[in-house]
Amino acid sequence: MKTVVEPTGVPNERAQAISRALTLLRAGEVVALPTETVYGLAADALSAEAVVKIFETKERPRFDPLIVHLPNPAWLPRVATASSLAEKLMEKFWPGPLTILLPKTSLIPDIVTAGLPTVALRMSAHPVFSAVVRELDRPLAAPSANRFGRISPTAAAHVLEELDGRIPLIVDGGPTEHGLESTIVAVEEDCLTILREGPITREELAVFGTVRTGKVTTLPQAPGQLPSHYAPRTPLLIVDDLASVIVPLGMRYGALAWSAAAVPPFFAESRRLSDKDDLREAATNLFRELRALDAAGLDVIVAEATPETGLGAAIMDRLRRASQR
Picture 1 (cartoon, rainbow, N blue to C red):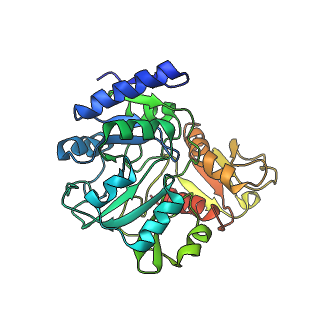
Picture 2: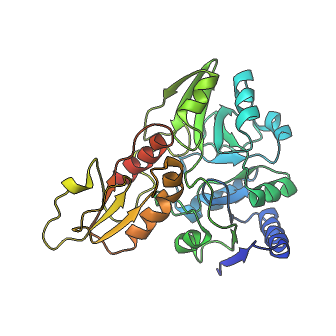
C-alpha cells in the first residue's frame, strides 16, 4: 500500500485533503488525522469492520479500548449516558483535550470499548479533524497514529515513520498544539478520577469536584493506562539531576533536559524541553524531542524530571511509562 501525505497549508489543499479523507473513511478505511493533542488514526467508530483495521494497523491488543470523537454534542445521547457533572465538564472543556468515560449505548460496537460497558468520548478542537468528523456526521475512533506502545506522533512526518505502507492517507495539519494525549477522567457523582494525565490539569478539574488518581493497570478501563507505553526503542532513565549521572566508558548517553542548568558535556546528544521553564512548552516538545533522541543511535536516554504541578504531572506520567520495559 502506498501512503499519501496530503498538505493542508492553503484552502484548496485543505479541501482536497478533507475530501480524500472522507472518501476513505466512508469506504471503511483508516486515515491519519491531526488533532490538537497528537495525530490520530481514525476510522468509523460505528463500524466494527473499520475499527478492526485500527487494531491491525497499530498492532494494538484488543483489550485496550479506544477513544471515540463525536461530530457534535447532539450525538452524545446516542452513544452514552451523561450525568450533570459530565455535562458541566463538556460545557467547559469541549471541544478540547478532555476525554470523559461514560456508560455506553449499544450503538457503540464492543470492539471499540474492549467489551467494557463504558466508552471514552471527546470532541477535538483541531479545525481539520473537526471538519472531517462533522462532514462525516459519524463518530470516529482515533487512537494515536503510531505502532502500539511507541512514542506518539506530533507531526505528519512522525506518522509516516511509524505507518508508511500501512495506511492510505496522512492528512498533514502541521505540528500539534499540546503534544500530549488528552486527559481522561471517569465521573462519579461529585468525584473525578483521572485515568490519564493530560493537557487539562488536575488543578483545572478540581473546580468541579474532588479529584483522585486512577491506578495503572494491565487491564485498562480507558486508553493510556498500561504501565508501559509511549516508549522509545532506546532504554530511558529518569533522574532529578543530569549532573549526577555516571556514563560507563564507551557508552553513548543522551540527555532530555528540563531545567535551565547546562547539560553536562559527557552526554553525546541532548535536547531541551523548554528554554524558559515553561511546562506547556515542555509538554508540546516532549514526544518530538524524545523521538529525536531515539533516532540518535544512543545506548541510553536520560530524562530530567520536571515538577509535578500542572502539566508537569502529565509529562512525568509519560516519562514513567516510557521508562518501563
